[in-house]
Length: 126
Image 1 (tube, rainbow, N blue to C red):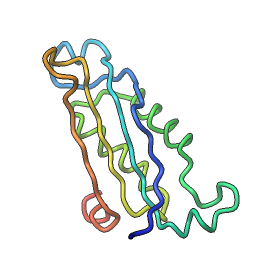
Image 2 (cartoon, helix red, strand yellow; image 1 turned 90 degrees about the vertical axis):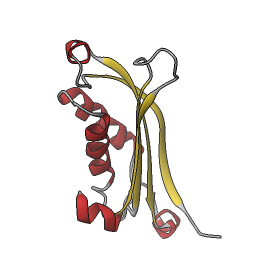
Image 3 (cartoon, rainbow, N blue to C red; image 1 turned 180 degrees about the vertical axis):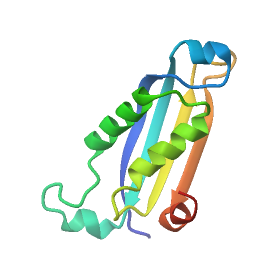
C-alpha cells in the first residue's frame, strides 16, 4: 500500500464572473470548487505545528481572492489558476482541481472540468 498525505477542499461555493456568453459576463454565477493537494507522507508525519504543511484555510482564502479578482472566460482557465496556488508549496507533488457550474443547464446537476497534474507535469506546462 502506498502512503499518502493530502489536504482536500470539497464543495467551496462562490459567485464568479465566468463564461463566454453575454449573460455569463453580465452577472456572477454560482461555482463549486474542489481541490486535492498531495505531498509526501513524511511531511505530515514530521510536522510539528503547521510548518511545512499546506494550510487549507490559506488555500481557501487565496482561491476566494482569485475568483473575486477578475472575469474568467473558461472554467479551465480558473482551474489552472487554482492549480498554481496549490503548487506554490514546494513539497506538493500533485494537485487536482474541479470547477463546476451547477446552474447552467437545467437538466444536469452541474457542468465543469477537472484537472490533475503531478509536479513534473506542472513544471512543463505551468
